[in-house]
Image (cartoon, rainbow, N blue to C red; front, side, top):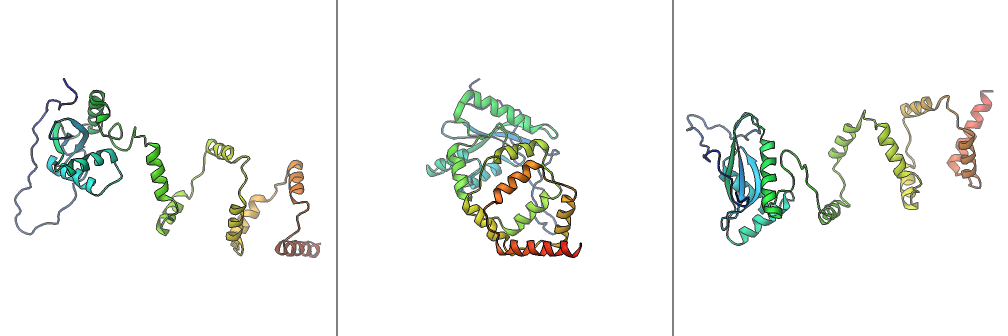
Length: 266
């Protein structure tokens, strides 16, 4: 069998019809992606040659899914870019891609396995002419972005700050999470020997200047350090790092305050 042509249909592509509306019209609702509904594995083809260029699975009618692909291409959606570029080229030539039924998937069946199998089959026969990014199924499994695409994505995000609600959501999502020993070892190895630039140090200093820790934070730091002593090697390094450096006025005042407290406590 020629892999460029459609595989034999295992069912008829029937248009889903809504029952006649009686009484008050209800608000339309989205169709949930549930395992209890039948699905259709389809191929997007160029009507001029009938070659399958994209494999998908849907629970909608083929006409609705076909219209969805056209709408995605007109929005210049970044996802599934090769497929959307191909659809736009067809539209520029006055041609609409056609969704054709390949296989009917009964309710409860593993539609992801069917999609992967069909993508593998058509990719083996048509090579790079199949425009699916990944291997199929849920998620971008098997999708490898090109260096050009990654560079464009990076450039589009540079300089953009996250909205406050996104920052708060990320913060809440990190509460209570601790890195594994392996992750900490990797982070330590990645930063070992790297020195921060003077600009970074200046930014951190400016951000911390004038900021006071809460009593709870000071208490937590004090309790975590209680009973801990620096090793002789660490003390030697600290001494060498501070030799010849004049104290700033806040440091000098803090030292005098600690000295005064020690003298008062005997």
